[in-house]
Image (cartoon, helix red, strand yellow):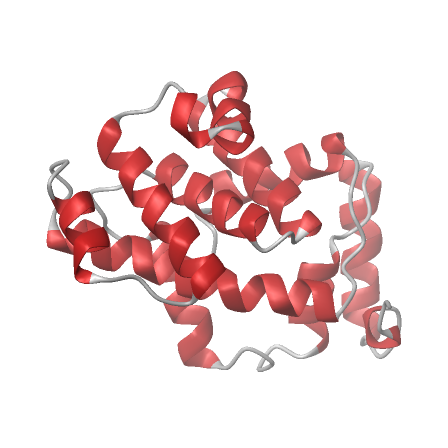
Length: 193
């Protein structure tokens, strides 16, 4: 069920901004952006910083890797909006759509390096079961993933386990693939602020 707050309550300046975005992009403003404009403090300053740091802060993982992690966690959570958004951003970042699609279709046969595969496997288990054990962490570390990379991956997982639930609770509307691609280009140009 789509919540009505995504359609009402904006200031005249914000309404004008939405109109300009729609005019120049040819696409409606995504619901996630509308929510941020409606209640800038909705996520809280620290949560917004945490999300930015998880996705765009310094990391041994590339932005494409972190976007793929977000898409993978969203797939496990069956959050269609977030799968679409982060799949598009991972495709743009990697410049390799078939690779991203292969990972989301079948992680075990996808053409990715073992450290990323092991990390995605661990994030999938954590998302499905709500816990991982020492053996799961040893398996990831044995592939050459550093302790800091594990922390960074867990931050992405925590961010998107929350974001997926918000997107589903607010009933974010799915965009066309062109709409997701336009959003991905914008995020990558702006540094995801």
